[in-house]
Every structure is written in structure tokens, then in C-alpha cells.
Image (cartoon, rainbow, N blue to C red; front, side, top):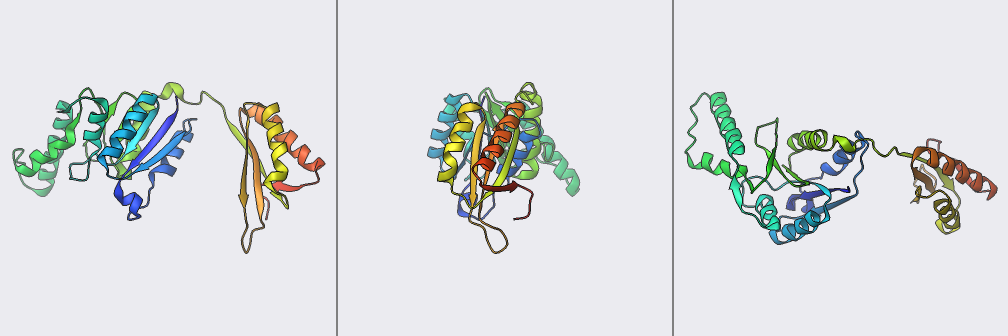
Length: 265
């Protein structure tokens, strides 16, 4: 199953907030022997969110969606998920209980008594309205849950909440996928050459060592770094090691200068 990430919020697209989810999700997946297959950024546009979710739900991919599940006018993700699924939003009983518990906690911390029927506290219950049939993703930070529908998992935009919730989903729903595909990556820095020169070698390596993938990452260099191309292979460890040894031998035969990636440049 492919794994995708959706990051929602006008503040990301406008530059008011810097996205932190993408690198963290890569890290959480890598720790479990998994990888991210795609990512998309969306603004707070309900129509676009609905279209995107309809497409990703139909794909069957495992998807994590960050942002837009609060209770302010610019939070549309809960309703958009329900619309994409063709089901109503309903008040989740345990989600409601969690929020009421949180309201009580806040009142005790402030030395007051919670009024669960006050307008502001009734409004907070909107954060427990999820698409019909959704299950909860626990939020250890403030008890206000995220939700899961099928293989889509919706968490808040706040990293302090979102990241432990994503980790919880991975560990509780997808541990059977962990480390199923051993993976390694090896590369060198190539100097004084062009990708067009290296392309026949890359194509030959991919043909001979499939499904190992070959990659090239050019760098123009700067005041302290020479221009170079990071040339490498990645895939199943044993096959990758063979492809890498062959690649280095071919570069040597072609009299192309190269060095390990950690060598001074």
C-alpha cells in the first residue's frame, strides 16, 4: 500500500507558517522501515479538499492528513471528509466525553467549575463531530481526538499533537507492514561530468539490477563546494551492493572522477 501525506492550511501556502510535518513524517516512517510515496499541500478551500479526498480515498492508499479539524470557520477538513465519503457528520460519543473531560480539567486548573452548557463549551463539541463510522485517534496532549475513516487518518495541524498521533496510528494499525522491504542506498559524488554522459550507465544499471533504482542529484556548487553530481543506487540491500560495485567499476573504466559522499569537496 502506498503512503501519502496531505497538509492543509492557508498559512502554509502563504508562508505565514513553515511546514514541519513533511520531514517529521519521513522520519516516523523511516524508523519503521516505511517510506512516503506522495505528499500534497492544500489551502483552506473546501471544494479542493473534497475533490482531493475523493481521489485519495478511491486510491486505497494509507493517508495522513494534518490540519483543519478544529472548530473555527477556516477548519473544513471534518466536513470535507464526510462529504467525500457521502456520509453525515455525527457527534462521536467518546469524542464528546473526551472534550467534556478536557473542559473539566481546564476549569479545575483555573479554580472554577465547568459549565458544559455554556455557548463556548457547546461549540467545542464540534471538534467531536466526525464522519459517520469514524474511529478515534487519541490525543495525549489535550484529549481532543483526531479520527480515522478507512485508511485515512486525520490529525490536527499542531506538531506537538499531530506527530504522536501519527506514531500511534502507525504502531497500532500498520505494524504488520514494518520493515517488510529491506532497503539500502549507496552513492558517490561525481566531478567534472554531465548527467547526459552518465545517462547510458544509469540506464544499463537499472536494466541489469532491476528493481534497483538509480538516481542522480546535480549540484552547481558554491564558494566552498565544487560542482558535482551525487550518483547512487537504492533498493534491496544485496542487489544494491552489487549495483553499486558495478557502478564504481564503470566510473573508473570511464576515467570519471568520483569520491565517497563524505569526502571533502
